Length: 459
Image (tube, rainbow, N blue to C red; front, side, top):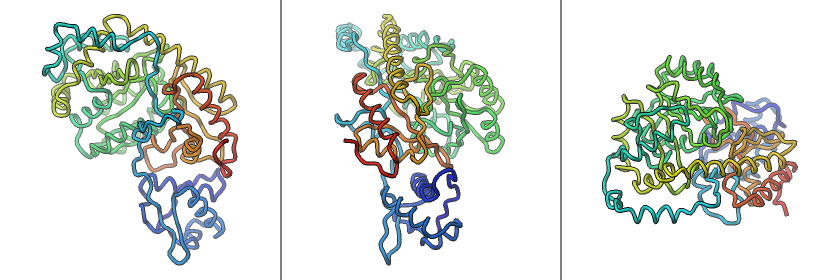
């Protein structure tokens, strides 16, 4: 019989029990069509009165979690089994204000058509349309090495592999360097794409507690002592979704644990280009242990499915072989376009303009959310919004969507069986313009000021 082992005692009790039902459905503890305990039995198990359980079940029914009929009992309803933020976000809906997807900020003055025409007119085009080595062309890898130096990594082009985007690079790490059942340490709140990839690869993710700088070293070491941890996935320079940034001291502490326990480090550095201060990668401290993934889609154009992976020599063959086994080679035309953007100096100018847009939008968000609790890095393209008492993150996400604004709840990012924080990620990068951002933020503020028990679409 189901028993909510963890209840948030800071909340109204029946709301906390309804939240526990919702949590355990998301975690797969409560299965679709599973019969819920009789109300009297559950009241006795938890040690509360029958009225509290009745109100909790009623609240769960309002949320579409369970359904009951007199004489038949109460059963768990079928939910959307995909707990990923990605498929829902990528459904195009022009009416929804997109504060969920962390897209690539568009800036004026850069026409992809000119780049494409230059490549089309190049006499070497035929060679770009042929098979090339899975590791990538030497010229492309040389440009990648120059680009990556800004992150404190003096990479030999021979250690760089051109991948078909950051997600492909992550999958190559998992499929090439790990075995099914291996344990990988991750932030307790982590990128939903990596969660999905790990699930498909049959890896076990072990959540590590976080603070204002991200992963806590003591918690990581405790996990390494408790289990055989083979790898670690982290985003030290702009953590997704919480927008935390590790200090140099924190990076050194994590690096020491990686070296001490011989972990394979996967560093996802896709948002580092937004940082204005220390941009040094943690992988620079563990060059023989760390795979450094430098995504390009957020920096330039999402359609250029290119990422650079800096791979230790001891893993290079397996990693490159996995590229061969998955896509044979990254799209060479895209790699050529990215190389030309870098070599021409256009890249730095694009980043400068994107940082200006990010700074302006972040200030708009800070002004709109003044008085509410949120976390944002100095120049982050998303923020982590802590919800007022009474809200569950799933309810807030659903209420926002009812009002045509998409945000992503902590449930989508959470790893483990504990209660996720009541927070949502708010992206600043996918809206059409500042006016749409302000409109979406104003809707969120109206919802934040509502009584969560009396929510309805805002007219």
